[in-house]
Image (cartoon, rainbow, N blue to C red; front, top):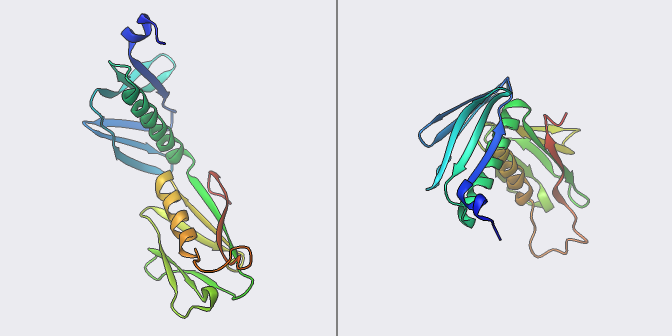
Length: 195
């Protein structure tokens, strides 16, 4: 149960802005710029207000809502997570590490000529290579003679989606995964470049 004082207060979430990060809000668009680059995203929900407030300790992004209904509280939390990820992304970036495993057929992993995809050839002896899409703004590196793939970038969602695309490329149907363990699997992820 919520008390009456909390009901009157509504939702108020503060996110501190680091000194080397610049945040601008124009209408529904929120732009976060930092040492690694810039990310722009549309954040809008009826009843929620995102604004920048100046404090003695530094600037803060404040997410406010007059009502404390479950939906508003959930959306405010989601937006807070998005904004924190954007700040971490422009400061440090994100990485996902994938391991290439092959026991039966030695597969080759390469970045396509355009750089917009990852080509997996000779997977389970297939003649046609499988292509995984690389999202915009994401860097893919193949290390250790094709044994490890490092996906990095400033946008956490794009980096995660690219890693998922690569992993899904080698998903097999009709084979027992305990016997045919060939594929590309996620082994690590975190903040930074992954080097």
